[in-house]
Structure formats: structure tokens, C-alpha cells
Image 1 (cartoon, protein in one colour):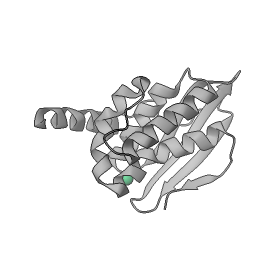
Image 2: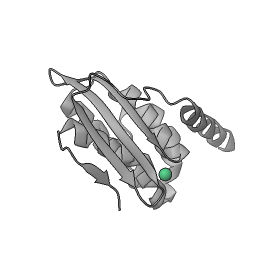
Image 3: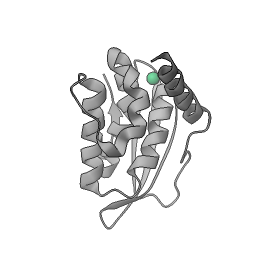
Image 4: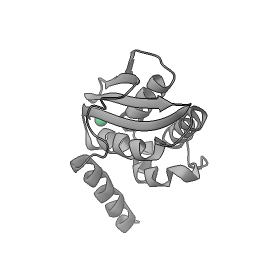
Length: 149
Ligand code: ZN
């Protein structure tokens, strides 16, 4: 178990050091911002939606390792998904981190299992889901800033 925790920790730190798809996306047609005042995490999502599919997904921001790693992994998992699929994956991830052990993670989200440790810490759940809430806001064209409580 501790080996697994160390592996999870290493993956999170790797994404934090080298976030994937980081930076402004010049041809994005949807954006949304997220702010988690409890931790100080901020994120901006840039999304290119084409024919009902997420063609590109970038993010910018700063915050704790959990928030950056979650956003980084998310950009890799959501590209190529339809709006309905992306919404469903958000729901699955949200239930997974906010829920109990009985909740199973969607098979497409296996990489996010590294964030399972946040489930014991409600404040950390907000860090892990910030980018996801913002991605869904961008996807559904709600031009606003998402603020977690
Ligand atoms: Zn945080």
C-alpha cells in the first residue's frame, strides 16, 4: 500500500512539475475560469469545441500540486470526447472523489486513481475538482468564474 501511495505521489508531482497542455490555446472557442479560495488555486480552461467534440483542451493556472495534476491529467483524458461523454466523465470523477468507497471510477478515468487520496480530505476534493468544474462550465458555454466554497 505504501508503495502504491509513493507511486501515486510521484505521478502527481510529475504532472505538477511538467503540466500537460499548459498555456493559452489561441484557437479556443470556449473558456472558463475557476477559483478555489480555500487553497488559492486558480485555473483558466481553454477549449476548442468542434462538431460537438472536444478537439483541444488547454489550461493555465497556479495552485497546489493536486489542482495542477488534476487539471493536467484531465486535459489528456477529455480530448476526443463528445460533450455528453465529457459531462459523464466529470460526473464519474466527482462522485469518485466526493463519494465513498462503493463508487467505482469510470474505466476511461483510470489515471485519476492517483487522486483517490483526497477523498479523506474535503478541502482537497475542491482542489481536485476545480479544473473539472471549470471545464464543464466552458463546455456548456457558461461564461463565468467558477468559485468553489
Ligand atoms: Zn489546492
